[in-house]
Length: 590
Image 1 (cartoon, rainbow, N blue to C red):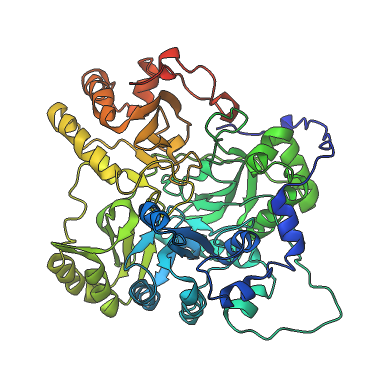
Image 2: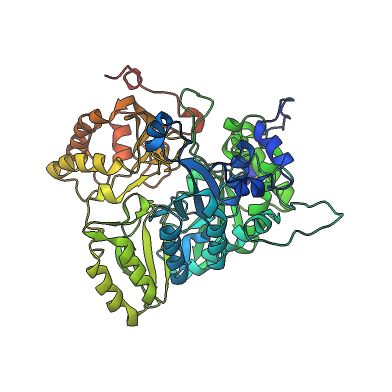
């Protein structure tokens, strides 16, 4: 990560991009009549479980992805049947905070219309999978009835705004949560398409053309992600996001935010022009300025982001193309005032605090470990049923963490004993009594529903952890946190490129293995081995874990150790991601 000093600002001159053909998605957005397309007509077509290709892109802006069950593809192809199409719905939860009533409604929808499970995402949102097309509209309608929505949970717009679910200074949480909600509301698309299509809103007839005051007719070049963190916890991984705000607290009060720009995780196998990037911290704004700064950063990306190549259209590339100093100068120009100098802060880690924590108000918060973020009932562990019973009596709220876990928050002293009893009854009281490695894992959904997945993630990472735990127990590392993340493809939804150990799907049952990310999410990792069969992961990593146990320095984290020991070179910034890779890393694997 780098820091920009206003006094040393020397912005590079802006050179307009040469004339190129716009990407196909730009045409889809232009023709869509502000995200309407032919979605309504497609929903009414009962001859297929699918939508047309253009509407599959547009429906993302409404919070949904069309998917199919890839496990069923061979059999359905054999019988000449259409793919088993269904839809994923992502429910926006600004700051990750939901009421007990909203939890109960989400649980109800999971059974009524989805596959009986709730996915807690790495962006503090709910995901429901397996919704068939004929149930999509009524599901969104019932989400709206619970005072939630899905608009802008996907698509080329600002996504769900994240914040620390339970900062060490709980008194600050209300302020950062309100900022997350304010930014989310301000950057929500203004189009009436969502209400017309899903909520039977009245179609307003007017001679004046509809406008999107912030996004314009073609919205953003690609998705945009915003987070807010309260040091010393970086649990929302601010360096992996397009725009982040680092809360600055003085004398117990929030005074403002450092502004970080240009983070992002996605890359493409075999294309070195694509890479993950760590955000640059460029300045400071007051808490009163935070919504304005968020808007103006979005406008900079709207006006200068690449709309010709979607692999080069994220804000991280805009920052690299022009330089952080140019971005700061342009942002100051759009704001009409200058950001202040960066203020001191320090992050210690990016994990969650499990079990019970009491705050200064006397309330308690219980963080539950949810492996892979999947809330479901299995034999011997009826977690979903237990959470439903807790929600029926809980007078606080539920907070989704960026690590796919769940906090039962603001438990009053009067209710704590009741909730403790339910946690015990349904087997959740000791959910966090796992190895520190398992508690530090994240996995994306991957197979069978994600169309981009090249390999398993959520269904396979627990197996890898179990295998590695044998060595951890042997060498005394059971209680040492090592961040480990697995994604089915290089788009990086599980943020593998800033974890100390990262697995990225390369093909069926094969992974690229990355090492050396920062324990607090402040440094990118480096490719250690390419195209590793899953059966070879344990023998590949066991000797390194043993070496770490024997040779680490006092307080040295695993990511720092593998760099110091020469397993991988440090990755300074995104353009360095593909450099200094050892020859053995890309040698042909067995």
